[in-house]
Length: 215
Image (tube, rainbow, N blue to C red; front, side, top):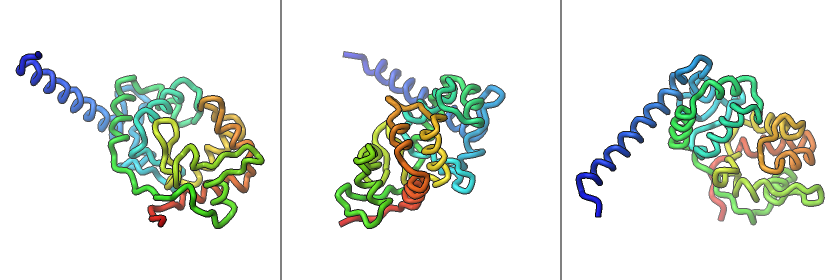
């Protein structure tokens, strides 16, 4: 049995380490990293991490830390391309990435829509989101990203409430191959099967979703 004083000491050390990491994450978010080029997250994603829809900058608040960490590492490695994020990610240390992703994940996220997968679509875009278009090998968005695009686990981020321009840019990136950082190019195959009109419509659909109850 571990002596009480050692257990307390271990708990205190753990708390101190967590506090230090939280402080580091807050610093990276609000002031930037220690190295040149590591800009503050709030410059583009807002002081609350909710993004800037008008500029097409996505929400980061409440996204899983593991997902955010993967994206930063992909920017750092060049497997996901973006002229702003690539140099920024390369300037962050591993410790800063771990700290800031935990901080962003802990930020309050907006209410997510409560939409059942069994909800009957009322138009073509809802049909694509809820049921897909299997004749073109397009699964329902909700089958991976959850009912209402709320996000599922560390691999499938939320779509609901993200800026339409950001969603369009990502889908077009999957379509033209400039974004390819998912396993087996799943999104690449899906996006390439969508028309330009469907890309815009599905982006507008998820961007407009707000919390609502479905009976």
